[in-house]
Every structure is written in C-alpha cells, then in structure tokens.
Image 1 (cartoon, one colour):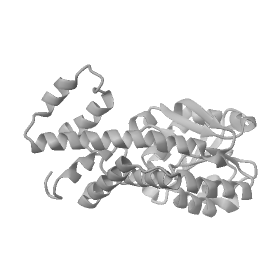
Image 2 (spheres, rainbow, N blue to C red):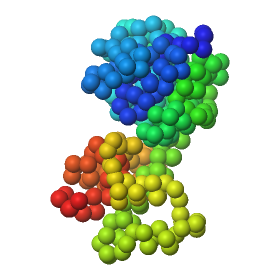
Image 3 (cartoon, rainbow, N blue to C red):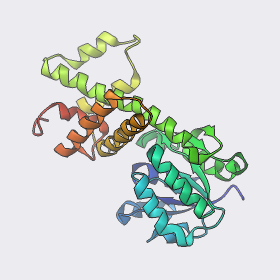
Length: 295
C-alpha cells in the first residue's frame, strides 16, 4: 500500500469534517458521507468526493474512518456500507462508542474481513482543524503501516494501547480522559455560576488562583467562552458531551465503579440541552445552574 490512500470518512460533523479536510490536504483521495448531506457538501471545495450513500463512499477504499454519534449509529451506517466494503480494508473506528459497543463493531469487522482499529481521538474543533489531535489507537502491529498516513494527517501524535482493537483499550482510555475533561468543564461552569449568584467578580477568582496549582489554561479558556463567548460554533457540543458522560457512567457501573461526578455532569449537560443549549459548546452547561430563561 502506498502512502497516498483512498480514505472514506463516514460522519462529517465537527470532528469528521476537519479530519476529512486534513486527509485531503495531505494528498489522499477522500470520499465523505454524512446522513445530513449539507454537512458534507462544503468538503467538495477541499477536493473530497461527497457520496450519496455509505456504500458509495467506501467502494474501493483502502481505509474507512468512522466518526459518528455513537456505537449503534456507527454499526447501522457500516451495515449500509457493507455491500461495497473491500475485503482486507482497514477500518479506523474513531467514534466515542464506549466499551460495550466496540465489541459489536469489532464483530462486524471480523464478519466482513476488515482490519479493525479502535482509534478514538482526544481534542476538539481547533486541534482537529489544525491536524493536531491525539490519536489513541489499538490494532495489529503488522497492519499499522497501512493506517499511519491517516493518523499522521489528522493528529500530532499516536498513542498505541494494544494489539487487539476488539479489546477496546483505546476506547477505555478515551473514557478515562473524557471523564477528566467533563469534570473540569462542569466545575468551570459551576464556579462562574456561584460567582454570579454571590455577586463575586469572576476576575477576582482568577486573580486569586493565578500562577498556583489550582490555575490551568483549560479552566481559563472555557471560562472565557462563558464570560465573553462565542458558544457557537462549538468546540465540543453539549449534546455530545452528555452522551459521552453517560457512556462513562455506564462503563463505571459495569466495572463496579461509582462515578458521582460523571453522573452529575451528565445530568447538567442533559438539562442544558433541554434548555436549548445542545448545539453550543459544552461549557454552556453553565446555564443548567439557572432557569431556562436566565441567560
């Protein structure tokens, strides 16, 4: 296999579109598909072929990359693509699908003679657009060269977690990392909500922690979005964060671990989505501390 590949990207939301664009810029032949075609159409300007069906998108592809909403959605789309999948093609599964769903996806890969890579990514809109994602990957060593050009195009670094994608070691690490991201994001929203409720200038809080162990760039970046905006386009949307939080809680429960903070984060995200903030950046969970009309 040459370094220039035919790559099919199924799912062109915030992350998928950025990944497809970087693959095209790296010189690969890129085919894209999205359930809502309008989200894929802009990629034609970057040289990608916009397919009408998943099967059209994957026909003859060396690598199929999925970046869809969740595990069941991914399995449904791959079933639609199944008639055109090439035996021996690599499947880079980058959806945050959770632990249980990975087993079903890996089983599908075996049934269709695909080389399965469990490969979620860490990062939001900006690093995705810059090709600076951190790729967490598990898959067979003898086939890694086939997907290395894809990982190089979308990420700055790849962390390999195992030889067997079906074991879900990369997805497990993704859930651990996302639990930290969600906890910080929820805490950022709550600290600013409390400051507002107590009539405390948020800048006094930031001055108090400046330069110390409680200070961090991520806290400041997310807080700035609440204080100054904009909350759209989202780096990582509230609705997606709620889904990921539920996957984290479920994974903990299935392995005998109670995750109170993750459960509370899920509830906050879901409440904010119900208030109409689902497509905004996940830090908009801040508004869950107030009434639906209190912005």
